[in-house]
Structures are given as structure tokens and as C-alpha cells.
Length: 284
Image 1 (cartoon, rainbow, N blue to C red):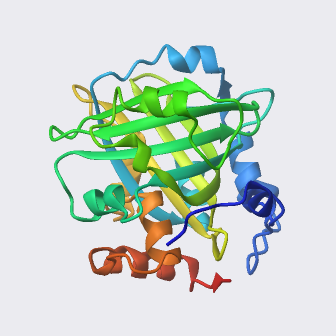
Image 2: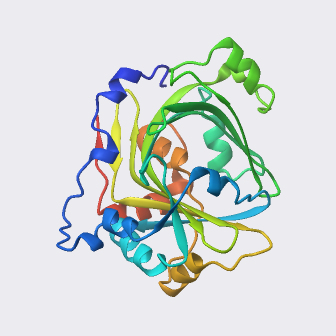
């Protein structure tokens, strides 16, 4: 059982957004991820916030980095890219909490009607961090509550435990750090209609005992207004016969790195990840 995660230990490991892409050589800059992003018109955070998606439909996709580059080139006229301080690729670092017997993980893999995640997340480009509670309801809605945090710590203070109790139905005192996750996010916003797309690359998971780098995997989440489901991005995915599927970064990380957890239900997704990344090596 993992009872402690060292912040310093994780920070000193290679960061995923700095990891080189191996095995692929692009002679044309436009055929790189950075080159593809440059073809999009930027949108500011203030403009993006105005695209309210209070009642929305979410769909997730798993693709490779090369597929992403090709797809971006096909839809660049339909979307703008979120740009903060002249940067479109934003780095995130997350520490997930769970109980000693992985109660929250089990709720997810068992597809329970009500599911929760508790995490500390840091937005590295903007030097902001938050404590968050995510609740997936039985009506398939996602509700997220959060408060500002003073950096990431590998424990929950008494005042934060008190805050968690407002949104979390179990005993918050049982929560303990489980796994770190870092990734780089690109966000697209539809030019005409209420739609946002988050694209996560360079996924990296760690405990104080093991780590795994899934840099070749791309996780895409398309968020559209429930009353307006027309999407150039979804149309492009359908044209390429890429189908949506449920995916939890937290559950995949736990299933790969933590012992004595139930993982049979995730076997198909793990095989999909291995196929996209051309094999997975777990170190530690």
C-alpha cells in the first residue's frame, strides 16, 4: 500500500512535456504538432470562458500523436486555439487521492452510478494550483468544485479536509496520496458554436516506486452543448472511423502502477494504450 508520495522525487524525474518524440522524423515543420498548432487563430482565456457549456455532452477518444497532427490539419479552419501568455501548450501536474483500499478507483472501474475524484492540480504555465472534487452523477453529468491551493503538497490539511466534506459523501479523513500525473494540454474552441475540445499529450504517471511514460498517447475530450451536437471535429473522427470510448487517466495510471487493484475491466483499454504507444514500459 502506498502511504507517501515524495514531491521532490517526482519533480526530479524527466518531465513529459520535455520528453523527445522518438521514432518519428518530420521534415516539414507544418507536419509537426507545433507547426499544426501555429495554423490556428488564437483565442484568449477571457473569450473562451464566455463559451458557457453548462449542459453539455462529453465524448473521449484515444489516438496517436501522428493521428492528432493529421486531424488538426483537417479542422484548423473550424476552431481557434486557447493561447495564454503566447503559449498554446499548457503543462499540468496532478496528485490524486484515494482511500487505502482504492474506493474511488473501484467506483470507476465498476461503473458505479455515482463516482468521485479528489485531486490537487497545478497549472504550471500559470503557476496556479487548486484542490478539486469531481462528481460524475447518475445522470451522466460532471460537477467540479474547487478552491485555490498554495502549491501541491502530499497531504491534506485539516481545513482542506473540512472543505472536501461539503462535496464528498465519504470520510475525507481516509484520503491519502496515490499517484502523480503530468501532461500537456491543448484546447480548441469552435469558431461558431458552443464546443470545446481538450487534447492531452505527453502523459506521465508516477508513484514513489514506479513510473510509466505514455508520451505517444493522446487523450481527446470533445465537449458540446447538449442542444447542438454538430461538430466538425466529431465529423472528422467519424470519417476516420475513430470511435469514442470512456477513459480515465487516474484509473489507467493506478491499474498500471499500483499492486493489488482490480484491473480486468480495464484490460481492453490497456491493450488499446499499448497498441497506440507501441508497447508500455513500467520502470521502478
